[in-house]
Length: 232
Picture (tube, rainbow, N blue to C red):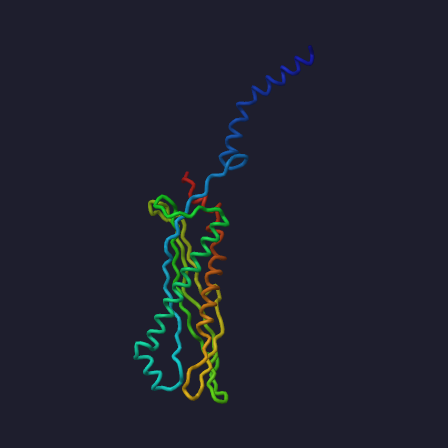
């Protein structure tokens, strides 16, 4: 009889305490503790807007030949346009690929929809040559210097109504992107050996990697959940 009485008292106590425990359990579920996480918002990647300015050296050291290059359709202007187009597409492709790889790792759904969040990216980069040395050595002239990148990158995340939820800008100069270049030009006016283009390619690859290193915390799944959470 005593055992039955104790059991009855225990059950009665649990039933009476249940209403007081329910709000706590519900609250834990709401904040993701002991409950399901809120879903990660879907993301649409807008086409990145890219502006590039890069140096394009003229070939040879004969003045008349250089002047002819500058005024002909096959000269420096055409070469510069090709370089700008090449590096613009290089940056756009590399950034898009790295973003897709990052969001796949974060398990963030990428879709093309006007009902999702949209990530807009902008790169405005300028690379300048800084001459550090010029000398004649035997039968050629040797030019050496540095290529240094400046400009800015920024991104913007908008909701389906176009409202800006997050925005950030990065000064590319702060990323300290610099590579050495060398131009070896024969004194007889024949074609030079110039590694500028290869070094520019290297700078553009590094630029995308360092941008991602700066913004990955802003784009991770938990950060996007916070952006997608209703205010209040």
